[in-house]
Amino acid sequence: MEFKDNEAIYLQIAAYVCDNILLEKWPPEQKIPSVRDLAVELEVNPNTVMRSYEFLQNQEVVYNKRGLGLFVSPDGYETVKKLRKENFLQQNLPELFKNMYMLDISAAEIQDRYEKFKAENYGLTPNKKEDEDK
Amino acid sequence: MIEIRNLSFGYTRKSLLFKDLDLSLRRGHIYGLLGKNGAGKSTLLKNMIGLAYPQAGSCSFNGINVSGRPVAVLEEVYFLAEEVFVPSLTPEQFAASTAAFYPKFSNADFYQYLKALDVDATAAMDKQSFGQQKKAMIAFGLATNTSLLVMDEPTNGLDIPSKVQFRKLIASLLTEDRCIIISTHQVRDLDSLIDTLLILHDREIVVNHPIEEITEKITFGVFNDTTGMQVLYEEDGMRGKNAIIKNTSGKFSKMDLELFFNAVTTGRTTLIQILKAD
Image 1 (cartoon, rainbow over the protein chains, first blue to last red):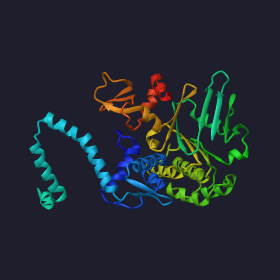
Image 2: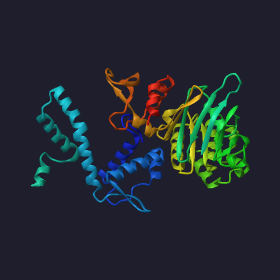
Image 3: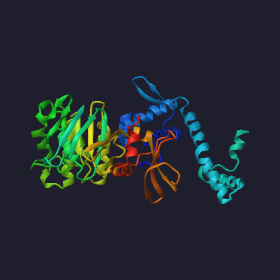
């Protein structure tokens, strides 16, 4: 795994686990790889993976079944989504706002592009999601 | 596991490589030993395992002084030298003649590691390239299953896929009972494997800290402008200043080993003081 320079490795490993949960590769109640297996896969020190797993246990994303290993929490998916959302709103969004302000891009233009992006990448026609909600 | 007390050593009496050097190493860790050329990294490793005798002080392994080279130490230690010496034997024959010195040697492990590193078990080692020789000895060393594994520049001469395999093997081998020490200049090869950093500089161990603890105290980052910031060390980089600052945010950055090494070896005393403070 290629690690970015701007974040501690243990957090990047935790993010990798969260990605797999969000992508539903590792659904709720599924066992996640052992410390050793993930350390080998990612070519990192097992102590670092241990730290990532402790972090994820504290966040209640995964839980320990005694003697069996770590499993994705029943509401692990929602938990990860909530944590990611908070992170996005606090870190990425101000950055985006700053660029929008500096480059004089209106919210309406962003909205328009966002709808097109969703349609192109996820096959959602504009406003489809809102229709479903009704 | 390893206790070095007041070690002084020099190849000549006049110039000492180490003076009153202290160092303790524990099981369950992978130590990365860094130091400039000629700082004495290899010599320190040799003192640690009884291949060189200190002028003063002592090195012990599990409480046993290593300089007498007792069997209880030798059978639990494997040392991979930077320049490996291979006899005119195949890896298979080498294991048959030498594995007996290591009670925990596993033939199954040996073949598995040879395969992972792409080494032919039935080809005479001295007819192979340097990289292949080195990998054969790495496979043998790992298969000895000794509780102490000391490796001097293990990734030198390894091709790209072998470095990946090497990292995977080391990651799989670290257990609570084992201690692995790797000396290297190739920090990028190993920076995700090392959990504790040792820096040998000016005849002393100036850094012996877990990376986790270092990044708790200091932050590594790239900044457009560091004016007004409390910079402990900085270098000009492509995207701005690569800088080390005191960690006041409580967040953990990724350690830049090269930047840290340069900071320490150019005598940034404030940096060392911050690390030593509790």
